[in-house]
Each structure stands twice: as structure tokens, then as C-alpha cells.
Amino acid sequence: MTRDAFEELVAQALDRIPPELTRVMDNVAVFVEDEPPADDPELLGLYEGTPLTERGEWYAGVLPDRISIYMGPTLRSCEAPDDVVHEVAVTVVHEIAHHFGIDDDRLHELGWG
Image 1 (cartoon, rainbow, N blue to C red):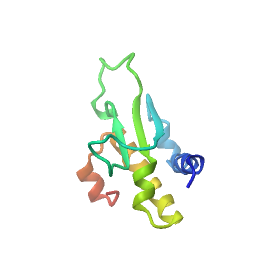
Image 2: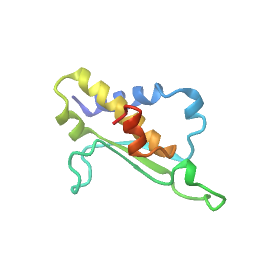
Image 3: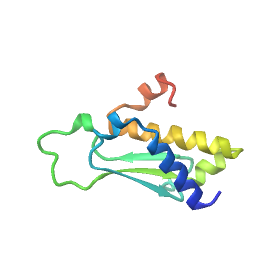
Image 4: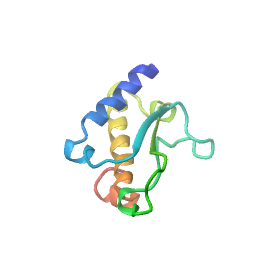
């Protein structure tokens, strides 16, 4: 799969996020990266920032939170194009959930592993 096609899958996954959620997302940017950090080579996505639930009056003038979706490990973990579509959608939802302050344990309980 090409980089452009993968980026389009990420854009489509973002477009499927309900408007009532995207309206309250604040100061966050989404990026497609080729590979994750070397210390976690199988990582599919990463949220870096301050979740909405932890922001207070002090939160102003900061750089945007960052959501990275990693193309290499996603493609390596999927056997078919449909698997890639599904995995990208799950990863995008997973990382956006972290922006809203939902931790991995709760995501697993909800079926978003």
C-alpha cells in the first residue's frame, strides 16, 4: 500500500468520528509516520499530550497534542487490504480515546483493544 493510500485511510477513519466528538477535540494534530520509536517497533499508534480530562486553567499556549499513526507496523500486521482498513480505524479511535482521557484498560473493556 502506498503512503498516499494509507494517509487516505487515516483521513477516512477521522471522518467517521461523530461530529459531537470532533467538536470538542481541542489542540490535537494527527500525523502518519512510517515507523514508531525504535524501542517499540510494533506500536501502531501513539497519543502524546495532555488529555482533555487533565487540562486545567494552566493549559494555554501549549503546542498541540500529537496523535501518530504508524504505517509500517500496521501494514506488517495485516494480511489483506480490508484488514488494514479495519486496523487503521481501530487505531485512530484508540488514540482519540486517549485524547479524551480514556485509558487502555477501559478501551480493552469496550472492545477497542
